[in-house]
Amino acid sequence: MALISYIVASLHPDEEGQGLAEYALILALIAIVAIVALIFLGGQVKTILSTVGASV
Image (cartoon, rainbow, N blue to C red; front, side):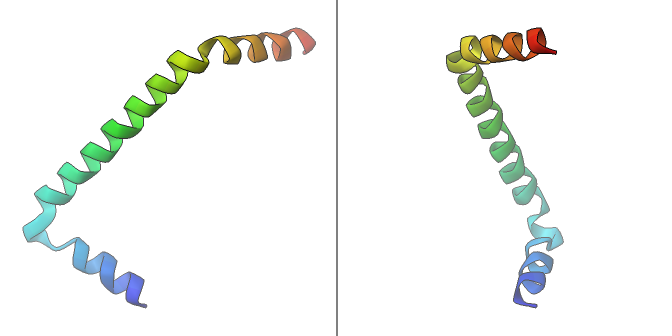
């Protein structure tokens, strides 16, 4: 029940802009991490997908 109260309190209209900015920052961080992971692991992922595709 405390979790529900916390969620409702965090959605208070006065802090809506701040919450939106925080979500945008989290989304940007996740996107950056995904891009960096693809840059470093792209060759390995390509090899694995090629192997899987060839076996199908």
